Amino acid sequence: MTILGFVVPNAFVVVHFRAHGVSRDSATAFFSEWVGSTPTRALTADLGITSVVFWLWSGLDSKANGVKHWWLVPFGTCSVGICFAVPLYFLMREYTR
Image (cartoon, rainbow, N blue to C red; front, side, top):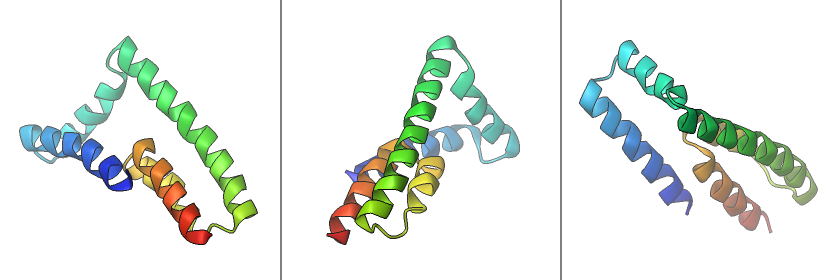
């Protein structure tokens, strides 16, 4: 699931930049589309809240269960997405046991 959570969202990023080129303008356009309509603003807010709640929970859980390298969770969320960070954390938690 971690691999799928990495590949699927990044496939959309690749499609965007292939169509529009890699430039400051295309990056600005990519991020501005996150809030381009009411449905995308709602989804962006939902994922943002979910991410923060998961960071808080996983931060506490990582201390309680001795999961090392917890910083990968917020980094993975911000660089790929919550669909990558959640299975990554659970994978790291399993390997701690």
